Length: 313
Image (cartoon, rainbow, N blue to C red; front, side, top):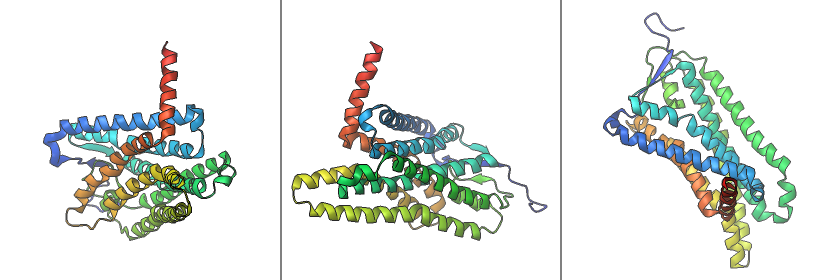
């Protein structure tokens, strides 16, 4: 319970981009168009992988789930952000804020596991091509994906159970456009040291462990590529991994930019803008990377366009 002179927080105010109020029309148009492109690009990948036969292979199965996570992540944030830009401020019930934080955590961190699973797929494709089909069969693919979603949901739920036990009294505004973990935790009037430790341990498991695994996997891949005698063989092996490697660099590059860049007095304000990198930029670039750099996607787009044209005749 709160102190006598304090009020229990039941509603959260999101201050959004108050410093950019005079540009709100431009910001609204830019983010609306970006959101539509994100939805269009990622939903197109999901539809192509689901309907086009030659894309029903492990790499694209994992890509479909990555695209699904991107759609869910942006949908949990951007529509509300557009409303905040339009009316200069957003309001959420405390329960709604915690729900958004929970959803954002699941859809964001599951990508760490999915990208790690994709690196394992690339490792088998390059290093163990003769055993690839047996090692990466549909049952294994389903187990890897469902396991990723389950583990991330379980870890996020454990942290949520700790968070909701804290007291939130008095201040109820966040200088951000969504309920991120750091700003929400700062609202608590309880001792949050246990939650900080809990979050640190979870972050090691959710971010550092998958990233370490990806680095080790690619060390093995590059070692095998160096042993390939023909230049064409090396180029083909590198091409097999290039799209995924670009995704790894973009995703973890944004996380490092937001969470590991040294802070100063304006860190909280700057993190609000840095958060746009993984809520907007990464989901926007993922379908572009795979669409432009992958011949199979281009071929599937052509087949899909022909099918769509035939249905209209």
